[in-house]
Length: 310
Image 1 (cartoon, rainbow, N blue to C red):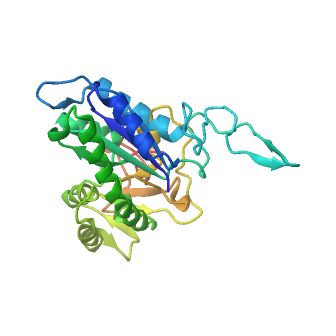
Image 2 (tube, rainbow, N blue to C red):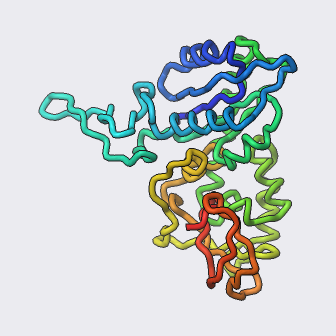
Image 3 (tube, helix red, strand yellow):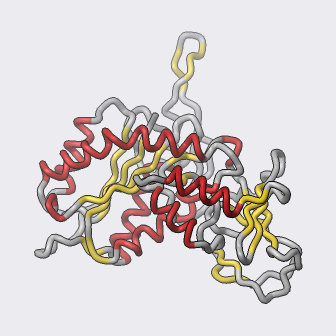
């Protein structure tokens, strides 16, 4: 497995040393670390203002889509020559990358996305922008601006996260998994609790409750108070969109809870209808992260798992 790890809110006095030490420890090529230093605050709290959040998203996109050179085992992308070489009559030949700006080959893309962030103000704004794309690790104030403690705490977390990601990945392999529901539009408190638990809590029990309460076998859909979410069948993955310029959308289109979507679920979407069976008549609001609040007038809406209308 390969992991992209983004550090956010880490003190600017130690960030470079922390990155250097982590890259030295994890030098086998399975991890790629990115991070930008934040302003040092006397109260040992990071401040997640617009700049800090944009830096975290930008570095996440860099780690995944290869906007700058990665370690030797990762694709460089961004229209440069592919670093994967192929034998050609005894010679090693490089081939140009044909991926678009926000794309990378599935073989070399990191399979997991982890966000390590320092305790601080406006944490919710940071997490809202990542929109459940990353598996998150929160560092307490006891390690703030302390290089060795920060590195050791990150190592402790990374040693425990692998089995968590493996179980989440397995749970999201089915189109009928409640872990794939679009959280902004499936507005149920139980979904909020489930998504919070997926960051290290007892999510299996909550996932079972969600399926028991909202999955209607006769309709092959999750049915909430307002809307019905019908998972698309095989061969109907027309929800896939082209290259994205905004890092927040690009990351949530690739990952949920730090896990890369299964191959068969890339572009997977829901046909969303009104629970009562009526057509949309402009009275029901659908939230699209790309276009904002919308009031459709149609029989149904194609909604991607990351709350974007196709």
